[in-house]
Length: 475
Image (cartoon, rainbow, N blue to C red):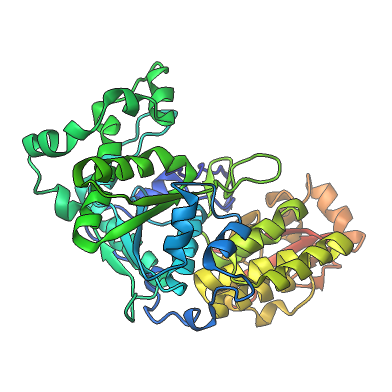
């Protein structure tokens, strides 16, 4: 799990400048036995979004829709899978490791894929890895830092709550949570080696991409991480034996681990099961989707605000937006094709990006939070009344901008310099004299003006020109 890069902090007298960023330190603040799911994470089992979600009836089958949406990158026998998914109800699962206190948008691809299968009548198992989270799936670059059992246990609880928010737990095919610590913890080392390890061939295990990359590096790989693929395979066999699970889903970068479980069940149980690897979502320029300089887009509002998520989607490239609508929304084929025409004919309207942002933020945080993020975005860029924006949403939006903490009475010219909207006090005074500066939407005309009027929540919005903004928080 990639952590966010630490952002710089600058000081100017009593004014502190900071930019938004979730650091390793702030991630670690969620660690410990007292960590509990926040209200933003817990949500409700009866998610109001569920009633609005459905698969697209214009397709002849669910499998055809999954293919059209680009969700099948690699799989076991496609013809058999099509029969399975388009047939009677089956049990399937996807696993999520608690290597951070929140899931991110990459994980959200899996949650939405699971939800589509659930809408097709199939029964999901949501596995949060209390044991695999203690080990860590090997990364191609370096060994993971092992978290304490207490931290992992707390993060298991948080991730279980997130999974429960996006998969319906009610009805005959309601989602059931499982934790692999329940069946791995009682295993002795001898049982693990004799009953499970004997089915694995070291040569095959060495061929896994991450393992191979690590073996060729100076750091090498520990036996701890090397054994991860056996533990994930064991999960599939356990769920096959106890729940009749016959399908595992995951990202295509996990294909080696997914197929490991298929092979273990074939060898030990003489049974055929299946796996689907969804494509890794990348931007049109080839960069990994959902991460920028190490920054993940988290589903937890405490780590990534609804406003920040809304802006992330709003900035989607024209070349990527239609594919994102297919994967991250429940819009129909006809609706998405209409947006494709708008992108081609009127890209300046950003209609597809706005709908993508609305749909995804609503799915993750709810309609109220999505509408508040839209209101804040419009007000910040001159299309609404800043004083009418929800104070908490406005504050979270300002934290995504260059922002400072200052005392009332601070000269506006000094604020312009401290927020780096101007390069010097002389530059700041010239900008004010030229009518290019506003505070809370009101033009500043006096070069000696000071910070007095504040918006609800004790904040202010400083603007130079049309699009250069900064947030002011009061001490």
